[in-house]
Length: 248
Image (cartoon, rainbow, N blue to C red):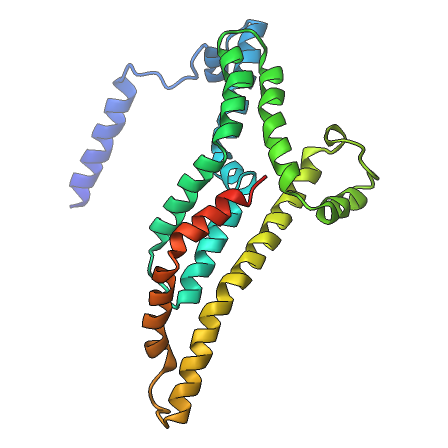
């Protein structure tokens, strides 16, 4: 066995010594081969890097800078208020929230397409101007939904003082103020949604206790009544209408 191993090792060394394959570093570095030597190539590469970064952050932008946050939280409140933990499934909740978000943000998207994307594709404006034009309608949308109290909080923390107009508010102040405003609004809507279902749970629980049926969980009895109430008032229609009309 030892003799075979020695022969195998000698054969491998012999093949490596006679091989004509070179493992040296290539003459043209990889980065220079991709970017090039012209100044315009570097500018294009930087723009490409920015675009890829934006695409990477696109899910966060969709969640945090649009109506998605409020919608998905309200829909989750509805499911929990009904007492059904898996119905509708998470895929349905997120899908409905996404399409409602697309519907609400369609006017903003149209403005971005007309004032930023199309002019940039037609080479009428540069990338920086296109980015500013795209952010302007989004900033206006967020500003309309943001409470003055939340906006003043981050302005005071940043020591900016009182802003006279939207142009004086930077993005790092407007975005977190918009997010906490959306969270507060979503929880207020969720509280209102919980009230009728909570009343049904209390009535059913009191009825079972008065009948001496202590061992029967009230949730099992109240669930059909909550679903029936939600169907009779056309709950999904009311919720969708309230969510869509609730944005300025």
